[in-house]
Length: 112
Image 1 (spheres, helix red, strand yellow):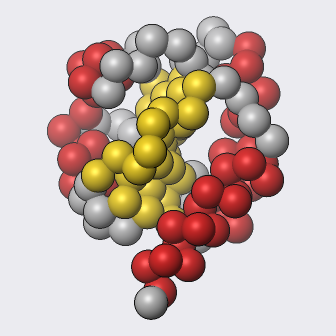
Image 2 (cartoon, helix red, strand yellow; image 1 turned 60 degrees about the horizontal axis):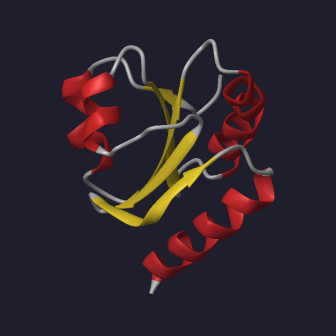
Image 3 (cartoon, rainbow, N blue to C red; image 1 turned 30 degrees about the vertical axis):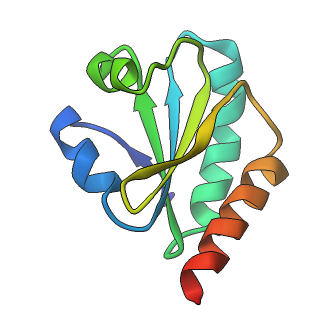
């Protein structure tokens, strides 16, 4: 079983991002690049279990959240730390190393 979290309830989003490092993948089932990014998110969830949360958010099911963060294109990845958005959204699909480098910086920074 993967550590990947699929957002089920819009109301849970705020509490999910409130503490720690959380990577949120805004996607849709019909989006080809989003599907390609799926295995990357699964792998990141396993690699960062206990260090960061990896969340998939379906924009078709949770459009108010997508609108709140101005998600215009998918896939879009937004990383939060203690409830605050870090940097700007990452639009498009990138290799796992790209996301891992960003997560490593944040996860290592929380240890100090």
